[in-house]
Image 1 (spheres, one colour):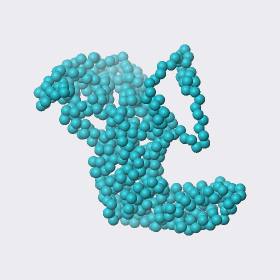
Image 2: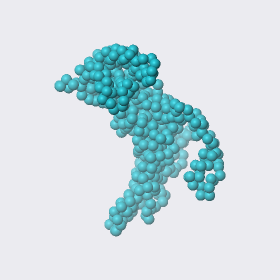
Image 3: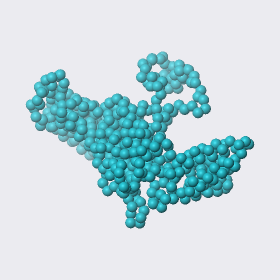
Image 4: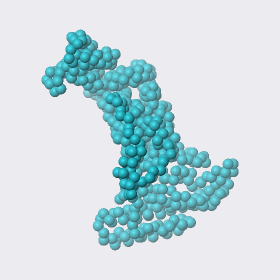
Amino acid sequence: MDGKHKDDWEPRPDDFGDSAGVEREARRAFDEVVRFCSASDSLFRAFEQNLLTRLFALGCLLTRLFLACRHERLEASPPPGFRRGAPRVQRTLKTLFGPVTFGRSQMIRLVAGASFYPLDATLGLTRDGFSPWVIQFVTRLATRMSFASSRLLCRSVLGWSPSVESIAEMVIGLGQMAEPFMKQQPAPANDGEVLVIEVDGKCPPTARADELAKRRGRRRKHAKACVCGCQRHRGQAKRKRRGGKKRRKKGDKSKNGKEVVVIVMYTLERGEDGRLHGPRNKKVWASFGQRRRAALWARAEATKRGFGPDTTKTVQIVVDGASGLRSNLAEAFPNAIVTVDICHVVEKLWELGHRFHQEGSDELKTLVEEWKELVYAGRAEELVTRLRGLLDGVPRNGPGTLAKRKGLGKVLGYIEPRLSMMKYAEWRERDLVIASGQVEGAVRHVVGERMDCAGMRWIPGRAEALLHLRCIEINGDWEEFIAFTDQQILHRLIEYEAVQIRSNKPLKCGFALAA
């Protein structure tokens, strides 16, 4: 189904004042559904679609019955500091089954005159106009796909959907609760004896200042480009008004990428065979925050999991060699084993090999395999010596020599400062981690698949909320997170606070610090 569920049968208007009237109408609707199922001669596709329409209409009536019964059981007297207002204020709530209109009593605060609705507070209903299930459902969809795709999927399943703008505001609103949720999460049970922290980054596209100015400026009205106003001629007219674009020079980028730091933290447990098994209790977190904040989050989370600053247990940090990540994490974990991803080292050796031999040649493969053997054997210093000798043997002048010298200098500049992070033979003997495969996959999954797609231009403060929610969903904590948010919202409602989840206020780009 696509769009609103339609059928020749429609429910009666929502004008019932008590639960008895709603119950009678719900029973009539149920009898209609039974008669339809008994008498239908249509194909199964049509039957299934029409049945769902009736079930959704019946669901709206049953929801109204629930609301009416709960309202009748409420305490009639106003709470301290309030007086009675209107006995029945109508409200429409957009639910899983569709819009439901109901009435509830109003209380008015004696000071300032703000309204309070006891039924809303009792049931945990916010001022958003959407039911709690709808809010969490469309937000969860938005963690997996674009806002427009979330709207399309929701509409095809439920027959209706919140607007794209409402979905984006729900993401920001729920995203503001992700940080408090992470703080209060307890340490996982049955953790392993070795803590591994893998860190990497990726730069999704962000909006430039001129793009934001166009978004936020007044929309000018333009005459139709053709009689029918088709997309083809609208595009031609738009390009003509805009004028030609300035041609980018070599190396210029239009992506305007801002780095998202991704951390994967898990433990390994040594088994009876002497090997380390895992990962166990893996957690993924990402943020537009600075690398220093990434180190602070990792430090706090590790301490919560029993690997404090003075721990005697093994802590290993695996990075891709970025100096900023390495220095910040080494400061937060002074006793940790810091490892450069061996795949990054090997990749640079292949790039260097192409400077000396043709692609696909046996000579290239033989040369790089010799270098790789030294790396895996923990003889990186010997590799540096060989590369130094090779550099000395390359003439300063002649065809191809400049590229060879630059390539050798680049690899030496990468390996020499990281020799202490390349003890791969020792770490392989201890069955420790020598590659950052976990975080490489997380970077593609968390950031790349959702945020680095064609046509996307993110505002970091708003994208931060989506990042946090996507990590919570990927970690398998979504149901726990929704239970936490429900509890927080209900606590605010019973304190007579007007609560709205939807928000367009960007988050501060920082990591949640664990308790």
